[in-house]
Length: 373
Image 1: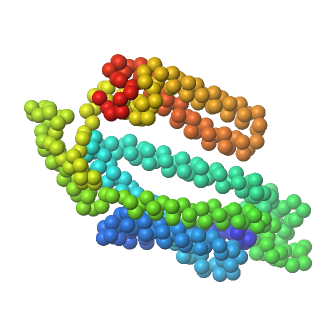
Image 2 (image 1 turned 135 degrees about the horizontal axis):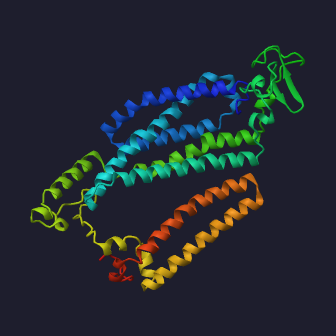
């Protein structure tokens, strides 16, 4: 739509093809670069370059690319590099984090970490797919410019008019074949922009904003923490060595003390690794933050806090459902569903913690403490 092309979908598919080629071509380069310079350095560099290029391209009007479509090749390739980057390096860095967590906990928790990663990606995809469309609808965006067909949607298949290029309110583009670009029969001249591809400048600006500018800005922001990843190849090797050394200290089945395995040093912070006791009381203690333990002096007050907040979440969920049913507005339903998705996490979260306080381990806890027993 930004290029105002009747065959915009063909150009869009071509950009996706260039993105696929760029992604496939960049995987090997990213892997080799990460092996030579480090995952964090490569991730930060690619995010910085991609972010700057995305921001720069966002200021280029769509009409310019319509006149010079060959310039979409590097744009599509750049999109592909970003897609490949999201799969190649972050997952490899997550594997390093899982190893580091094993050093401290003594257990392999790949499932927990990968599920959290997947859920975070899904939340971002939901928000990234919903918010732009809601704002675009508010700005006056209409699919196909409000037309019934045209611009990639066959009028013959959509409304039974195979001889129409587009069918819009007050404007029907008749032709002998109905194909895009075919000669119009009852028009003095070809319109500069087909009605089915026409969008307001405000809508075009929003499309460019969400497609290029915001991703570019977020890439620049993400480059800041990306470069602070402390687990380099050397540190990761030291982590694996520390795990092996700690595990070689014997276990309870061989007369050793599983809770007092050989002392090892944390390669990241240079301090001795303190493994959690993993007792029933300590596991229950980890259900709550230090600030929560400090804020509530008794188990009764902690239970009361959880009950009150749980009732608040349930009341908010009921109010949202009632509000969506009463309003019937699509935007209200969309935002309401987003808020409900958050409440569907908070309700079981507090519910499980409240249930944990009713177990036998709760009687051995002193709520005011800030360290696990």
